[in-house]
Length: 384
Image 1 (spheres, rainbow, N blue to C red):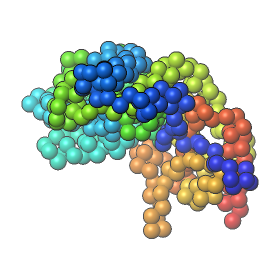
Image 2: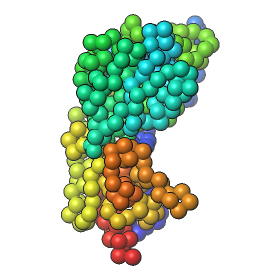
Image 3: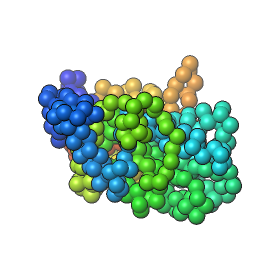
């Protein structure tokens, strides 16, 4: 790993993923040849219209829903915005209360804060030391004014998987809409919307080897949302704007691959993640796992290194390895991740937290090298 011309080992798949070669191949004709507007009735439009509808079927197949329940968006953030604002504004005559958690992605938290400025009330539920929300706490938070529960399927920082099925049952019994942000879970664990019981589910393409700038929102038949994007009647009148054909094709192919290879990918990502964890435990003392030990994404490893500052550790390894810090340093003060704060991770541990996330392209050799890079850096910093 001393050769600086080598690319660093990539262990930040929760931030974004490389493009799958099969995705690139599927997209290429829509970059080089098929340029028509899917709304056009002539031959050129028919080619791209067919491509969009094929992609819609591919996404629906992964989620086990109907193609007409899929709306293409610009990504996970837009999907979350559309789902939450759409339900809130369509149902404000029925109630104004929304339930979520303290560890949601900003694409949910910030939407909820916006809605609080527009007459809505939001309950931000606590999580336990593993980052799990209590179903009992969800039940206690429900009032006669509750119109929406939005809880992420899996956390982006620590990987903890939430009990969405149980929360969905609670919601259904009370006629409450339930949304889940599944940006981190789609392609990593099963995301069958019927087993999950959700009404709305958000997808981000760049988390499953498709391009950035494309996503989808699953909307269960019969669920009504206020219009999010005004204009012409694209996406059956739900999302105006000429379709991003090139990237829609990429997302469709990525979903097809995810369904085809799910079991194999889960096993490989877990083996690489656990190999990294076990290797570091053998070489280092004073490291702590964050997140649930079992109910966790197969690729996600959040580790706290006792006595260290995460930014110093990142600086030490960044030539050789790409990972994410669980704390940021501003003006000499360490700012702890809000997720770790919500989990009550002690500050002396939280400030030395890194997130490693493996992917289907991560190799055993990369893990072996990563163990050496990280452990050498930790030992070096601790000896100073």
